[in-house]
Image 1 (cartoon, helix red, strand yellow):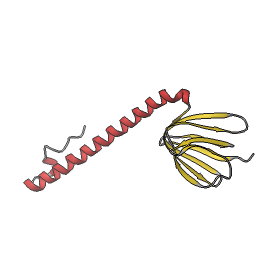
Image 2 (cartoon, one colour):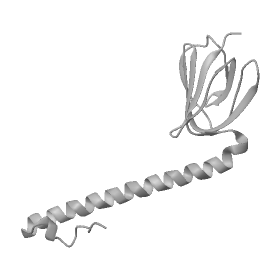
Image 3 (cartoon, helix red, strand yellow):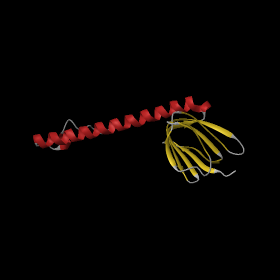
Image 4 (cartoon, helix red, strand yellow):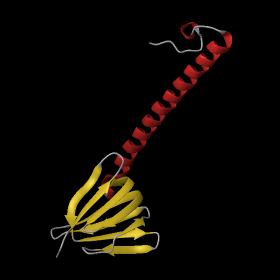
Length: 140
């Protein structure tokens, strides 16, 4: 049986990259099985289990927020999160912690920009030198 190159890619890693014989996914329209030679398409996936197999074994991955690209002899799932079902809880907690850290860094950066803009505006209005402004944060 002919194989298809298959990948599951998340923002943080390539969770799966291997040749497979068959893929079973749950889409907005229902369950769909895909083999080599399938028509090219893009499908929105429902959160849940993706099943795939090759000659040696069958595997399952839990995905959230996924899109499937079927193109010629290549299948790619882009997902917000993907993990083996037994590892999902611990990995999800780590993923959420990384998202929080990233968000806090963005918020701090935005706050620094707002402070700098305010200091610049204040100096222009009052004719002060920016380095004399009390609104500009001091460096540690």
